[in-house]
Amino acid sequence: MLLDSVLRSYQSPTRMVHAIGAIKALGEEVKALGVRRPLLVTDQGIVKAGLLDEALTPLRAAGLDPVSFAQVRANPAIALVDEGARLYQRERCDGLIGLGGGSSIDTAKGIGVVAVHGGSIVQYEWGKSPIHSRIPPLIAVPTTAGTGSEVTLWAVITDPERKIKFNVGGTPNIAAHVALVDPALSVNLPAAVTAGTGMDALTHAIECFTMAYHQPFTDAVALLGMEYCASWLRIAFSQAHNLEARYHMSLGAMLAGLAYGTDSAGAAHAMSQSAGGVHDAPHGALTGRLLAPVMEYNYAGEPERFARIARAIGEDVHGLSTWKAAERAVEAVYRLTEDVEIPSLEELGFSEGEIPMLAEKAEADSQTIGNPRDVDAGNYRKIYARAFEAGRRRGQAAHPDGRLASTPEASRVAQ
Ligand SMILES: [Fe+2]
Image (cartoon, rainbow, N blue to C red):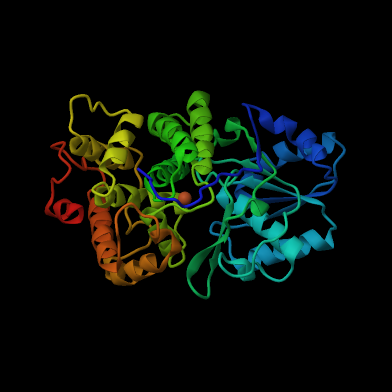
């Protein structure tokens, strides 16, 4: 229970528009913002999947003159954002559309920051130059159900030189003006992408619900976000074209994004963001692989909140003590991780020899602050060891006997 006197607030400047088939309204939404020549920021996967055409059709039908920038790569780097900002100026664009996963939407946000403030996106790393002005009108159109970037106040950019990812934002000035959520855009996602992005969304909800900065509004959206994600991820993973599953995952990811508030997440994101700067691993799968070990470490800090998570994600905790119910939340997330076949850390490009370095980087990440249990590099080493160990048992039941501390490693990380 938060009983301190720190002023908390919640602000979202984003109009949220959603429906199966909502993409058809893109032209009218852009027009309503007074934009005539939007820069459409996306990636080649979206082009090949035919989704760029699906977006261009309503734009042209509305008499708009869009410019496409389809060069986004996963974990967008500083140079990419700066290149997009130069194109924005050169083409005399007057608004932005981010079409794709979090990488495209974050790139569009970054382009907006540089277009208005000048210089390079690296100058606007959180804590450095302030983002004092609103970015140009931005419509975020997610094609995955994961980052929630369409409604967050953050963009995550990679610095290849420092081998880190850094956050830009923490202010409504960077948020999208409109989040246009069309669950039908995600029906062709490969199962592995569905799994990774869905676990990322679940992580946002769980971490934001348990972090030090939570407040009643973010609690409320986090709980429904985790309910949707935990209930529907296995189905979306198993049936790509199941629109009901896609609908709940898309809306669940948006709710989990809203749970961010103006603050950050916790240890799983401190680890995945810092590790994601070391190896070019997909953010969702990496975060998903780390979530359960982090929960296993954290639940001792906020047992009542973890017990509440267990109920939200569908565990029967009737008659259980708070501690037992909290353990159920951890076990359920371990099972989900395996059921949707999240890769091991080795498969994501990491080796156990890197644990000390990864632990140091996680400790230095700003999202360590606010984690529900005190955590330092030594603790991070244990959590990483547990995550490697859990990944190695891929294909086996993580907890065949149904108990949390079924291995010596699990016992150690929980202590
Ligand atoms: Fe994330």
